[in-house]
Each structure stands twice: as C-alpha cells, then as structure tokens.
Image: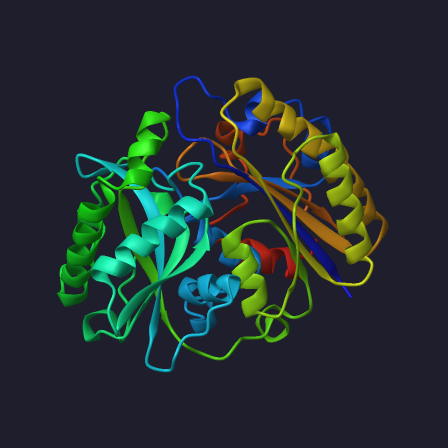
Length: 381
C-alpha cells in the first residue's frame, strides 16, 4: 500500500517589518536536497486576501473537499471540546479577536489563555445567553456558540476563519442578509461587554492584545461522524497540538498525537520517533508544526531543527519504502505556499531555490490543497 506523509509547517508570527520567511532565512540543507531530488511547486489558494483560511488548507491536505458536510468546521470544534449538539442546534465557531477602530488588529488574540477565555465566555453567557443560545469553552482563542435561533439556523453563510481578517473591517466580511445582520448584532453586543471587562483591562496593562471582539464562522448542524477511510482511502494519524486538528481527527476517526510544545532538538527527535513508529502501521500521516515566536533568530533556528531532526529521518524512511512525502511550509508572501515532494512515481521537477519567485517558474502548482493531496496519491512518471 502506498504511504503518504504530509509535513505542514505554519508560520503564525504576526506580520512585522523585516521578518524574513522560514524558507528564505533558515539553512535547510536537507529540504534543499529534496527539492533537487524530487519536485517543488506552489499552493495557490484562490484568495485576494493577505492571509489564508488555515482550516481550508488543513482540510485539503488530509484529502477532504470543501463541500463535504462533515468538513464543516463547527463540528471539528465540537468534537475537540467533547460537545454534543442537539438535533435542532447549530454549532458556530466563536473565536476571540482583537479589534481597533473596527479593524482586526490580531485575528487570534495572541497568548489568550483558556482560563481568561472561560471568564469572558461566562460574562457573555450571563448577559447574552438564553434558553436558545449559550457558549461552550474550547481552547485558547477558539470556542463554541450553540444556538437554536432561526436567524442562525439552516444553511450557514460562507464565513472564513478569523485567520483571514487581519487588518480588515470585520463588518465588511458579513453577508448582507438576515443571517449577516443577526451575526453583526450579536458581535456588537458581545464587543460592548468585552471591551471593558477586567480580563481585558489586565491584558492591556500587561501590553497584551485584548480579546475585545468575537468572530462567528464555520456554522454546522449536528450530524453523525464521517469516515476518513471512505473520504481519503485509508487509516491515518494527525500529529498536532492544535485544537482545530484535534477536532478534525476525532470527527473522522483518525488517530491523533500531540506535538511537543518546545521546538528544541529533543522535541523534534521525540516527534520523529513517534511518527516513524506510526508510519510502520498506517498509510497516512499528517504532521503539523507551528512556529509562533517573533524572535528573528529563534524562528529560523526552529526551522533548521525541523529540517535536521524531523524532516531528514522521515524522508529517509519514505525513500526506503513504497511512499511519498510532501513538505508544505508557509512563506510570508500572500497567496502562495511553497511545497517540496518526493517519492516513487512522482515527476522529477527539481529547483535549486525555494523562494516564491523561483518556484513561480516551475509549472507545478495547485489552486486547492486537496489537489495536492490527490496528486501525491495518484501521480505517475
């Protein structure tokens, strides 16, 4: 059986001047070798915005299509939080964001703890909750709104994740219909409560971004769990500590193992060991690593450790057997994500430079992450 490994490295550092991308600044000798021995290209998600819908990228890279009902993200949030929705209840993702003068300054309220969020959600429930509306605690900035109100039910409007809101007026991202008006009204009411809450006053005193607004998206109705085997052709495991991916794995019956919080040498070695053991038993691994630090040296060191202590042993294992591997690493260039792929039967399209500019010269590109997943399973010489 063909084995597939996808290594996804997300750069979650907020934009700032002079911050180079992980691929351009780090010394990734092993990834460079793979780029010359295999194939390289670009993901080009169809967006004009400055940031990607990360949920959409994750969904595609595990082989799920956007129109798959089970791929509605509200169900992932509920699964991750262990929440069961009633048959007539809608599940909405409720993310805490930071707004300033109506524009989103921080789409994920950086460093918001679950304990802080729980206190804020309690305030929302006390003042805005009812028999048909209540909040549930998730993790960090990600939480759930459970509603039975007509305006929030039925087919939910297509709203992207909070990741895509940076620098924008959130009101302009709402649909101009009854659902959009209901969502706007609730967000504005919530903002009035959050703006002067003691949790946010303390965060401001500590020079931290306040969680002074919520963003609702990913609305989903209750439904039975799906099957990854039927969706993507086999069993698999996700390695991630991310709330969203924990919910995805539970929704599809995938295995899920945490990623060490400390991205030092020992952390990557531990992750590589666990991934290699799992690869012996299962045909698909999705390994998700996040770089969050804004320290210009530490972020590049983390990428170099990933290259040497995680990517190298994984790619060597894939090369010894009947397998294929894709490495997908964020650039800081809106609209494009570089990838490198190796494995039996893949076309050989090497590149010597992994910069976005050079990769544009390579004909291999995919508009959707699900296309990359499919290609990794079917491509032939």
